[in-house]
Amino acid sequence: MKKHFKTLTIVGLLLLSYACSSDSNEYEPVPDQETPTPQPEPEPEPEPILELDAIPASAQRIGDAAKGYEYLIAGDYMSSGVPYDAFIQGFGADDRNLLERNGDNANIPYEYTAITASNGVRIVSPNCMSCHAGFVNDEFVVGLGSHAADFTVNRALNMGLVSSGISFLYGGQDSDEWEAFDQFRKSIEAIGPKTLTETRGANPADKITRVLAAYRDKNTLEWTDEPNVGVPDEVIPTDVPAWWLLKKKNAMFYHAIGRKDFCKSFIGSSLLTLDDKTKAEEIDPKMPDVLAYIYSIEAPEYPFEIDANLAAQGKPVFEENCVKCHGSYGDNEEYPNLLVSLATIGTDPELSNLYTEPAELNDYFLDWFNTGWFGTGATGLEFNAEGGYIAPPLDGIWATAPYFHNGSVATIAEVLNSSERPKYWSRNFSSTDYDKENLGWNYTEESSKVDKETYDTTIKGYGNGGHTFGDDLSETQRTALIEYLKTL
Image 1 (cartoon, rainbow, N blue to C red):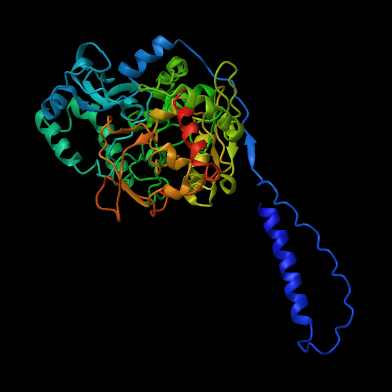
Image 2: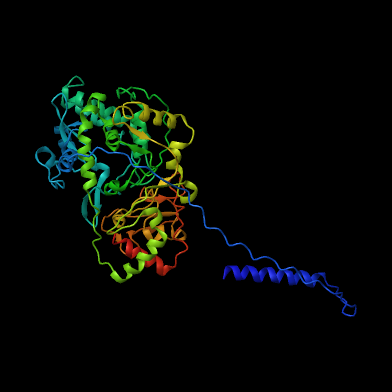
């Protein structure tokens, strides 16, 4: 229809041109006119160029999944923290025991682990579940990225009070308890003011790692009292991805910089508390077990009713429009591991730009990981910043709202229709406030940013544009596609 319209328009313009060039005197003979030269049909618009690069696979160290789970929930990959007695006095016991742990760990929240520090003091420190576990539909899911964590508050603000309390309880800063607490204190004081997000649910993981690297020697991993490079205040957020997707991926993280040995990347979290590379070398042989456990996690099934007939109608829509980047699902699954250029995907570029734009911190960070302890040796990692974002697998996509790498879109319906995405929106962070029709979180559209629960897409790094591939689908196609996505 579009081509026919263009042709008719050209013919109309030719006729108008002919009429205007004729003499208006009806009594004067009109000279013979040459037949207008036919105009060529307009060329059809070319298909958009998709800039896609397949990320190569790397050999990974795989251990024992059962051992990996135990190490994740009770292991000593964190080595400094708040003395156990002080933690219980300050925060109280938590009897939910969601991870079904034993001993001291049965009495504390799932996102903390009680361990024995190297000097024999029993301490409590954050664990991986702080970011990599959460609730959806009131079910606790290990491996689900936390969608409700609050990094809008400077976590260092209370550290002075905590420090004073520990010093008082244990007789000053010469005690074993203070020694076991001190590195945790230093790290929180360093990262707290530099990792503030603009909204609840947004995660500053990239910034936390960059700050910790700035304070440590790249070879010895020893802490320095002053940063080795300037660290700006700006925070570019991420939405924590689900662990069950990693088994399909050849690169870690949305920007796909994490290449080669994944186990070394995991040890990055231990930069929060370790003293030096000696502890990192103790942790390293445990990480293949952790990777095996993460690879064993399966996506949770959609817990509500699925319209099988509608889902069947959505499958060909998916195969025609989504498979190329996100892979196929079912008996013969394939995942292409494509790094999609910023020009093609069009989503907020700032997370990718963190590693590709010229900046002293960018250069320091990549060099720190690639040429220091993490990147050298027989099992070194590689941080390769090519720009763009990896098109993720979609297993369990129903559970991973909000969407995009920065969590800027509340539902899949809006992922598939960019015109429906609100500039400001808020939600109540209840895991049961789920939108079954649109697949994601129920939310309220706001006229401005009213509080920390309001997502403001006008802020740098928080944009919700791009990924407009679903805009050309009909409403019928989108509805069927959403129903099919529930089955993945």
